[in-house]
Image (cartoon, rainbow, N blue to C red):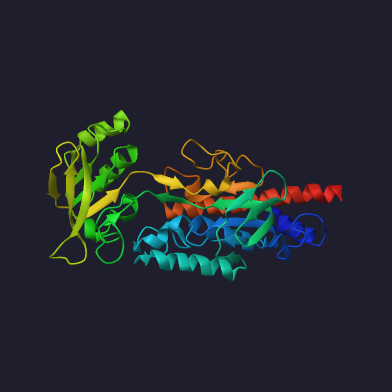
Length: 364
């Protein structure tokens, strides 16, 4: 019998040994007005990191509970992928797949292997003692291990034409991820624009020169805050120009290609002049906000609010609490890398549960 199978048998054997690990999985009771659940593993999140973790954990017979949230951070269950149209860079879909369809597939696969999913938002946690406690408005969960996979939301600007639906060009020329969307046919050979002044804006503008005819960086000040080396790369690129001291005040459509972005109204904040900038794509590169406020300092965060994990693992500052996906990754922020860390978190959690199970077995 291999080590993985032995560990799974150990965890299963402990379920029938109260009050040890996972004593009363999936049992529920009403406590202090909240329906209370006990579980081996609770996963918080709804994107590729959360569902990959759920799939691995469920197949390892850890019987995970997953809270996918309800409009958490103003995004539907499924995370940022639900705000995109065609996803062409996730392996296994040579013809691409709609973001919402991909997240639906994640969810069905998690449920197929036995993950229990609640469409509720975790609002508070208590990691000060073990087992851990997590709370929604109607439920409390007592968990031996936790995986945080709540993601990070790309910051967006609001102006006429920037939104979704009628009159807006979000996902019809406006995006917040050049790496995700820049290679789409709608942008190839067309003039493009990036809003921002940091390293992310420099990186996205440089990346977009592979596809666009030219790229304009729109910045509200007269100097970038990006690192010098990133600025030098931008200034040296003949396909990039900079629109200084300016903000976008409106996005409008392309009359010939109905329904897609045709250009921008750009206001110079010094002179007050407003000019047309004809572009077929606009990319926000003004940062991301990790969804960590609900943690209330329960785990270590970096200066930007991302969960700090131990190098080469998904371990956080609290033993038994793991983090995966964009909530701990400020560099790559891709669906496939999030899925990879979701796998890592599930394996790390399984090994952790095996270890504490062994300790409890010795003390019984």
